[in-house]
Image (cartoon, rainbow, N blue to C red; front, side, top):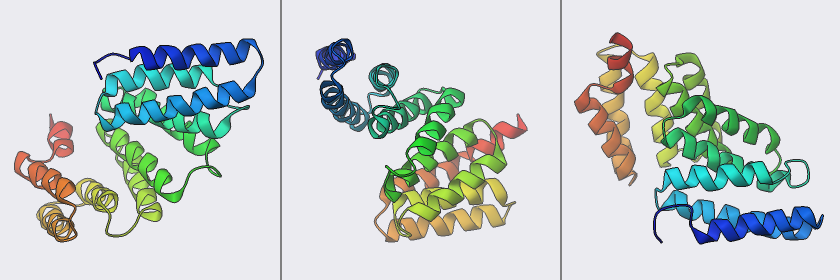
Length: 205
């Protein structure tokens, strides 16, 4: 698909508006589901700016009280898009709201993913305590040998340990992640080690 929100978004938004005008919750529900699927496609394609346009508009169009589970999905996707486009404060608002409302809707894996987005946003904002707490939440919800678990563990080590313990611990996490087949996370940790780890460098500038 080409860049931009696309005709798919225009159609989905039109269906929701049509459903609202007719007070037809079934149409709204079906259109919202299509919107979630399309938003996930944009996420997988790393089209984060388009994701913020689509998921953000649909989260505004769908009533959170009438369609809570779908609103939670859209809000979490919107929050991730915002984080990936450097709008961390706004991202946290939607990520936390989706978790609060979606406590009974989200799976543990989904909760872990959202908590990881929160941890990364809080790290970018240099909110150490909040970032560490969020990373600990990730570890509660995801599988021990998953990439998300290794990423959360690396966040905690990066933000709480002093040298040389920090570098030693991160190298151990990188090694274990690679052994478990989590190459992407291992490479990220390796790169951060080489570049001096962003958070500490920024906090000293």
